[in-house]
Length: 305
Image (cartoon, rainbow, N blue to C red; front, side, top):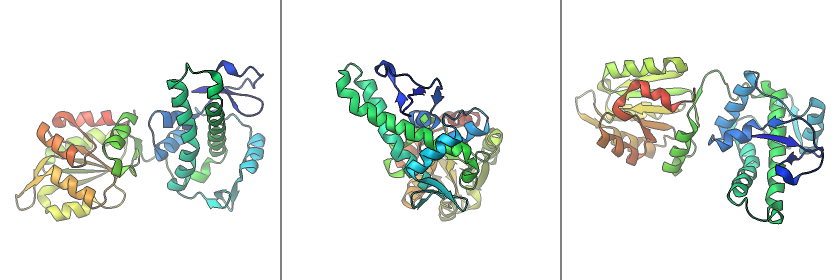
């Protein structure tokens, strides 16, 4: 979304703003990421990737931003970022702030799109909120641009990969209880009982440079599988729908999925089965989406290029 700011620092949206404006268009990367369906970490991840790729253009100069940062009480104390008295030393902290600022802009943008035929006077309040939110979002991402080393210890753009936005939205709609999922995938766990399938999945994901862990169910009991799978740090599980354990007992992907959700696993789960009935059962039990026909190469379609 390309916008132009007025001299007051507010965005110029549409033909209703006739006043002169700075001839400096900008792209609000955070706003665009949220509009495309990214959640908190994904939006920040996208911003940092854009900055590191040299594709980011700040709107505010460092001097302008210094004044705005002082106005909004955004500062660095002993190398740590603070907004007022709140220390932003984690993704949840940054995310809470950014999401709260983005929400009025997203709501306002959707409202203007849906009710664009309404009289302009009825839009003034919405436009004002939208302008204010966009200004703050642009200020924050420009601040991150000038102080990007601050986030180096919090989020890295070198060791993860984004899920495509449509899958993030699909998961949020399906599993409202599991909205704590991140859309940045760093660690993948493969659960299967066929070594050939495991190797094919590992090969397919190799180009994404993700950390890949494996559980061959023929080496474990159901209880051991659950304990290993719910370890902290696993973002995505790719699991077959029908397997066998170390004692050659049947293992069903839907039962394991249901148990993992009960145990508090908040990551994504892909139903990686060649059996349509098993895929549907896993989705009903809490899996997020399915890999049709269990084709390993299709797994790349879930990720942004």
